[in-house]
Length: 321
Length: 206
Image (cartoon, rainbow over all chains, first blue to last red; front, side):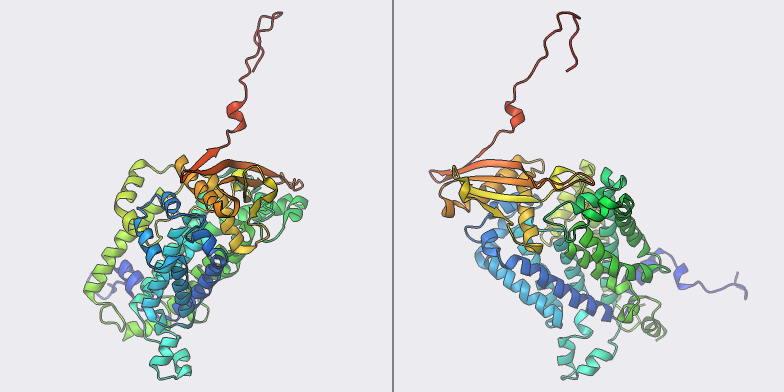
């Protein structure tokens, strides 16, 4: 076996430990995560805006959602610390900190501290009125924590411009150094995107309406919460209704699995950029669809997205060095 | 890998690997234990005792079970209605003409009042809190209702009807908030026992 026919083991053949290390720790280009950071910031601002008009009515001193009812709703952990936060900052204070943090994420100021602050303030706000939280909020929290793990402001960001003494062009164009934190954050995004999509598909397949093809109708028949009225189209074509119904969990399952197959990963991620917002509109949760599309961004292979792949030249050059 | 530019040092990788292994195990238990799939008591207990204390504060104790509809009445749009007791003309309805995510949050609040989650006290707390917040506007005796907008059957026409899913009188007496929930019609309906048919001597089918 030691003769000339013996070949050196390929990197992928070196066992589970190496696969684990390569998946989580191989340094990669952080620029795709800068794009995720900007989109997370914009999504966060949009969702926080929905609190703005009624924050006092919901969570104020005489608000509809009392700390006691909030604590009773979230059976996980006691709500004593909510009273401390309420007394110290008040919901308006927490909301203001969250808005400032997500705005800073958009421009890339403040580094990891800002991302952690954004995730913590958003979590606090959701704990204060948990029954108001929806799927988009859940996904936004996950995305924000992943952004906090990434060195996202090392890529194009206000921090980088300031560190480069104002040289905007070099901050945007010059590739930043590969980072293991970028790979860790990308891995976490991949795991969570897959888990969320699969969990949603499984939850849907527990209901008969997702099997008999009528779920699309029941979603469209919600006169107030639907985004577009497709009831006429569904009433005119049962095939269309069945197709839409079956396409949603089929896409979710394909996305969950496809992210793990390198041959189809860019294709399924690019499809996700279009399909997730469409699914969000069809199910009446457009911000959830947008959040899921943000999960897909690092895996598209488009522009900066290519750098997230272990086979990208940036990573390969780093490996050769 | 440690020699690569930007690579993590060995102790960092070991620490992060340890944290990842714990977190990913917790994530799996959260997804299994937070769904309505009837996950085993053991899974829920392990998750609740070990992982919930550090995942829940960060809003990471999530099941991601988003069916969006099962075609059931409780999947319909919910409306919150509050009025002074005995004076329905002064009622307020939420979300009213609001739109977008703001309106969705109001609908979630209304729906929360109808969901016991296995704990009727939880519903009562939420409903009492909502109604009590209206005492300033309506006085210390209000009527709270949650309505569901009826949906058309497949291929049918929107009935434009609001069905009552929850109704209660909430009042303040001596500083305490009392919630008196309307009895469901079924609870007060007479039980009908069919008479024996004298000719055939057989009992008709119920």
